[in-house]
Image (cartoon, rainbow, N blue to C red; front, side, top):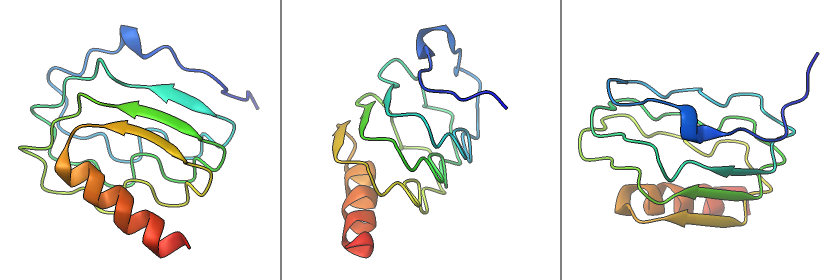
Length: 104
């Protein structure tokens, strides 16, 4: 089994993607992730995107757009180490606040 610690997201083309659900599920060795270049205008599903990313401490999703997103439920589920979140979307902010309140 290979351990993923770093992902280079600049090569991802998300222009036509409608679901990012469970995209990083189980990446429990991943500590930092920069998705600032993700284009998400067509994304409908963001639920459980970072599910069980236990070691994730820093996350940059500053350009994620949730205008067309219907499902954002538990996007940070079981991300207990997440302490630094760079974001600019109000729905992402609310999801993080709800997650943090639920965790502690």
